[in-house]
Amino acid sequence: MNKILLAYDGGDAAQDALTTTAQLANLAHAHVGVISVVPTTTLRTRQTVQPWDNPTMHREQLAEAKTRLEAMGLEPELIEKVGDPAQLIEDVAERDGYDTIVLGRPASARGLGGRLRRSVAVEVMKHARMTVVVTP
Image (cartoon, rainbow, N blue to C red; front, top):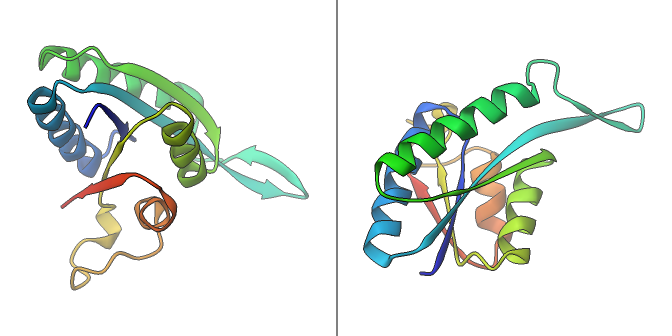
């Protein structure tokens, strides 16, 4: 494990994933990248940012993740993207040579008998060509 990509949205599950990422990176002396993706939707054939989301919030979440990871002895690379979260997480991981992706299980998927509903985590697990860790 040389490079770990943490998918981060600031939620409780992402906080758990951040802690797991820091533990793995410190054990393996791995490089850490943190990606935050502002999701888009198609409206009349145009991609637009979800109305409840905004890039500023994602930048703030990345800054928060950086501060926490630095406090744990890591120097993360921050990656901001806009588009389809699962696709961009996979694309960045592949393009930049990450061998592990860490994501948090979505809160809405917890307590469903261990099954994950359709989510970014599920889509990444289905298509990524590298190790994917989904924190409980």
